[in-house]
Image (cartoon, rainbow, N blue to C red; front, side, top):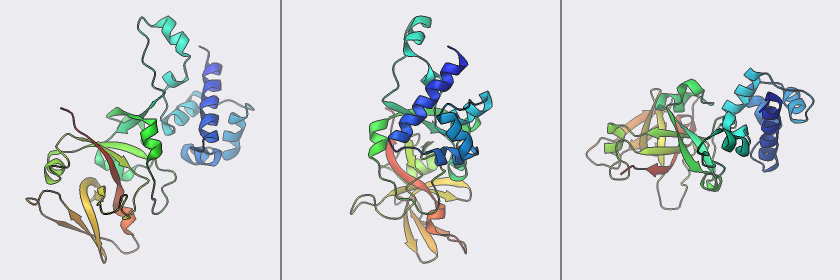
Length: 238
């Protein structure tokens, strides 16, 4: 497959996302750092992208070159055709420090990927505090021993935690049910229930054997600045 065809397929995918309301040319320009006119010219076939430019677009849109290949060509070149990933989104598995600080996840910081159904992700409601428009929405954390045991039995050590970084509000997602959050505590992610108390956040564990912690809200900051995102799915391998 020629490079020009890959660019055409990338345009097609981006235009489909724009049509579905998942993306805009302005958002893509902000995510990549390109001028909006540059993105517009690419989408309208007035110019191409360099290899470095394509790599940046693929990264911020969580796409792989494999997503741009013709399935029939893959079938011709492979003894066993790879299963279609059209129904799934590749969500990056990262460390807590990366989830807390990086709006866009760079490939060097991706530990692995977890395939999540696109239909599930699209159903999730966002509740954003502050400017999170340019943040890659979903990431996955692995619960360490401390977080896993402090949130037992809701969470176990090693569990996969899908984090919605566009839900950094203290508003309950469901009535009468407390949200579990990934919280930015000293640059790392802590998994807890969170309650506001004046200029402080109370980080409450599920397991009563672990202590309640208090996180001071620094002057000029808001509670949402400390919430990495809501835990919207817990996966436990058996």
